[in-house]
Length: 267
Image: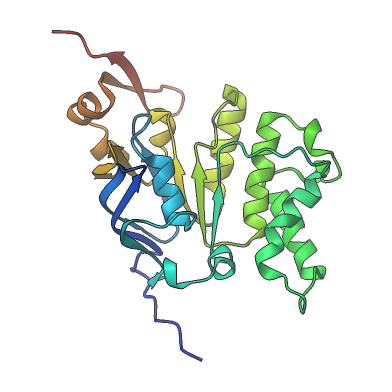
């Protein structure tokens, strides 16, 4: 058996290397390189159509790039099987739905699939992983509830619990707060920040993005900035990428930085 390569503590846990993707002949991601550091929360931001969702699907191995490669724990993703990838990395897509009559517990139990086989059926340790995932997202008391009875915010929490039941080291989330009310957004983002895994989160709300460790900014399929939020979200970038002016305010409640936006004035 071939030994796995040694992964050092400072080596990116996930890395995009000169990725290129074309869909129907149109470039969607171009020459994009991005290291994701272990245990960080990396925010992926950019206007609609900038390629954020496509990049997440590339990082998850759902689609193959036309150029470049993705490394997971230093190994090329395309050389690893789906089951092996799913044991280390999970993707939470935008508001996935199902018409099946399924309970919350059964939905979360689907996350154990990568660990099961004919020789290793569902066992006590799998139920323990499901329970831990439900506890982590605050949905243990709804474990026997029907999926269709849940609110939008509760469904998002169950999606995250299903991903956590995979016990991955890396969690990718595609606009997890989409279509949720403000209370649900705040609650869900607090939950995501608290999860003890590496996180890459595509976000629309730039004030939510301020809570990330680093931000990767995309524009027309390219990475145009990467760094800490206070370094990245400056006036020039906001004007160039998002076509807005911004004022940075300090919230007197907790001293946090808040951005207020105005459309660029026409000239």
